[in-house]
Every structure is written in C-alpha cells, then in structure tokens.
Length: 393
Image (cartoon, rainbow, N blue to C red):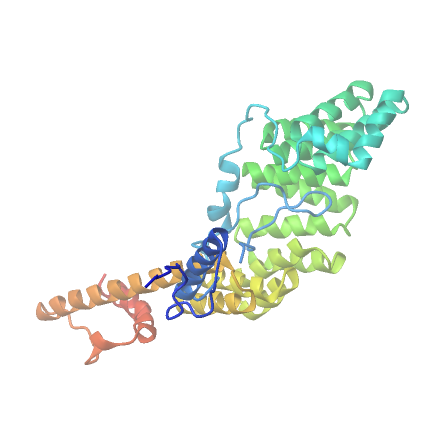
C-alpha cells in the first residue's frame, strides 16, 4: 500500500488559515504581538500636550520638548519647562539639521526651489532670490543651506531686516540662541518698530530662560500691534512658565480671539485653565486644538500632574477607545497604573507605621478592615496621611 505524506496546516487549531506564505505568517505574528500589547494595556496615540512657543507665524518651534507627564501644574511650570533652555544656552557647533529630504533631492523635486535656482543662475534680482531660497530651505529645516542663503542675502543687502529676523528664527530652531539674539538685536537697531522681530527675540529669551527680557520683548511687540495673536499666544506660554494662570488665560483668550484656527493657542489656553483648576474648560480647549482622543490624552496628563492617577487612567482609556493604536496613551496608562499601585503600597506601609505608633501612644483612627480597601478608596487616604503627618509634626 502506498502512502502519500503531505504537510498541511492543522485544521483543528487554525481553521481559518489555509495555506499562508512565510511573509504572511510574519505579518500575522507581528499583528498578534501588537494586539497582545493593546489588550494588556487597553489603551493605545501620539503625545500632543505641550506648551507651544510660536514663531511669528504662530507655528510651534521645532524641536520643542513635550510637557512631561509627571509635571506639577500647581508649581510654576517654568520649573518643569526650564529644561527647554538647558541644552541650548551656549552656541552649538554649526551643523546641518537632519532633514527628511536630502537637499539635492529638493532641488530636483521642489518646483519652487528649482525655479529660484534657475533665476539665480540668470543673475536677476539676486538679493530677493537668495532670501527666497533661504526661506524655502528653512521651511524644509535644512538649516545649513538656509543659513548660507540668508548670509549671502545679507552680504548683498546688509540692512534687510526681514532676512535678519528670519535668520534669528533659524538660529532659535537650530539651538544657537546667542547667535539668534545677536541677529535679532541688529534687526531691531535698524527697524525699532518691527513687531515680528520683537516677538522672535522674546521666544529666544524664553528658550534661554531670561523671562524678564522675554516679557519686555513681547510687550514691545504688542505696543506696535495689539492684534497679533501669535504674540498673545507666546505671552500665554510665558506666563504659564512663570505659574501665573490668570495672565496666561487672559493672553490665551486673546490669542484664540485673534486667530481661532491657531491650534497651539487652544492648547496653551487649555493648560492655563488646567493650572487654574478649571478642568472642564481645559478639556474644551484641548478638543479645539485637536481631536477628542487627543483632548482626553491631554487631560489625562493634567491629572497625572495632580497625582490623580485613577482619573488619568480613565482619560487614557477613553483616548484609546476613540483612536485605536494610540501608543502614547498606552504608555501613559501603564505609567499611571504603576503609580497608583505604588501609592497603594505606600499607604499600606504607612498604615503599619500607624499601628506601631498607636502602641507607643500615637493613636490614629483607622477603620476596621482597612487592609482590604479597594484601590479607589485607598486613594482617598493620601490626603489623610499628609494631614496626620502635619498634625504629628
């Protein structure tokens, strides 16, 4: 009798997978691993909360740090965000910013750059074309080429204040803050009523941690034009760093009135409301700055900052329901969950200390069965612990 052996997928275990290629199985395993992570964490997005210091067009400064999920909004946010300036106080060595697109590719694929290079070769309107080329590379964050064309512009027109202001912003985004101050001061010497240059100089001072100088620059910009929404937004950011919620709210409101489409202004105003304890209004502004999933994620970070870990977990979970595969929310959920269980362990340890102190004359009214309290109830004991410790002291 002749027996033919043929390897086939086991129908008992894999009824829905007939013949699958090697690449197919790899994709299935990858998806299974990803789904396992999601099921374990229950939440899954991108970090969207951050104080945003904007340039003269109201766009976020490149390379800015996001707000840490462990921040304490009750203390001056400057204490948390001072790290933004810590790495850039001294000029760094000039180096090209890593860009997604190679500059040689840009020259062949971007019609505007190709047209400007052609005009430059014809020798027509050289300073204007050089400035436009610098601006084009600046938009692509190819900083070394942008600096080169800005410098060539200034070599032919040393009093071009628009180019000086753009170069100052370039140095800010590049992290060369002292160079940015020098260039922007030169622009303001040539044109003292240049509101955009005052604003850009304020953003550089904010990054350097020179908050009084930053406030003075923003104030000068508003003296020239009080309707500049991006300046009000930067002042909102500024007062958030200094922990002044009311001033931050005032400027944040004005920013969104002047420019309702400025997402960074809504985001900063939401943080200002959170600093003032107005969480519902904060949530509304976060929602205006992005989608509802991002709003829940942001409010979750605010609750994390207040050590309200259970509320934070609920918002991170809601963010995941609204936006599948929200990985930042997944990580934040796990962080909040771990912090909550660490708090429970701390409370239980404190209760054992209470018991020992009770034997030596320090009586603490602990209800019976406290060792079996749920995670939610134990959370409410944190304030009691602090109050008792203050009483004992």
